[in-house]
Length: 262
Ligand SMILES: O=C(O)CCC(=O)C(=O)O
Image (cartoon, rainbow, N blue to C red; front, top):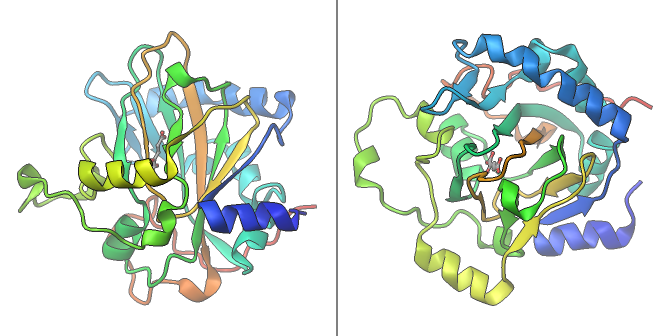
């Protein structure tokens, strides 16, 4: 159960870190499954960089059931319910991998615009939970967040002329050329006010973050991988009214409330 101070910290700053709440053994076992995805790079739920490395794997639990255990794990689910004060269902689940010497950056963005405009989610009553599957240091491209920026709501996007009129926009919510990014001007203003926090940590550490928080990450130029699992939950009273046109592996359809395992 989270402490009142932790819940207040999350609401005030838009993120919360819980250090090493998964054991070494649990994380090593999950990490050992990552190699099994390497033969599946042609599947649509596996997003690759130009050099063929895997960037993201959506719906990983459908291929490796061990990842399914995180969905109802009370360290992830109950804590998220406490932060949102609501019952939740799983909205999206992905692994973001950054290979050694190569794993590419994520531009400054908010997640909620993709879910609001892409899937029709009405309100940002959602939460993402990043589980570190590797020790993550500054040189591996950790998640960067601007505290308190979640309070801005959806902000104006940076205009990207080359993405205008592009027919298939799906990849531009998944690759390193994102559709909805935040202008340098706004990132600078926000960072001058609240600075930038680099979420480094030991494997087994978990970061909860708000769908509107400004976040980004750098390319991994280090010789070490940076693997993470990111689960996004939505509140059960915030289910999109219409079925999203995006694939099931991007926007889950089962909105039954999840029950945490003991
Ligand atoms: O994996 C990362 O470093 C960033 C991920 C991210 O920004 C996202 O999934 O929205």
